[in-house]
Length: 97
Image (tube, rainbow, N blue to C red; front, side):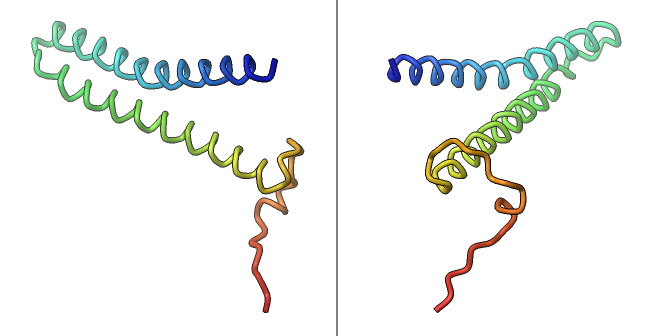
């Protein structure tokens, strides 16, 4: 049963990555086509496509960083799934000799 849960979780994560990448690109291209037709500047679609791609990469980066930090914090605290306090997250562990 745990295997199915892992597969569904991975599929959901991949879908979220795709949506987070495609939506900004689609919206910026749509805005570029609209602005291009309204003001007869067809070239505006290309820079807006680049802006959408950069926004999508930023979304994915933020999401991946959040997932990675959640994963490492759960491993650090024994993998029990317990939430650690903000003070524990902010504390730097220093090894003393």
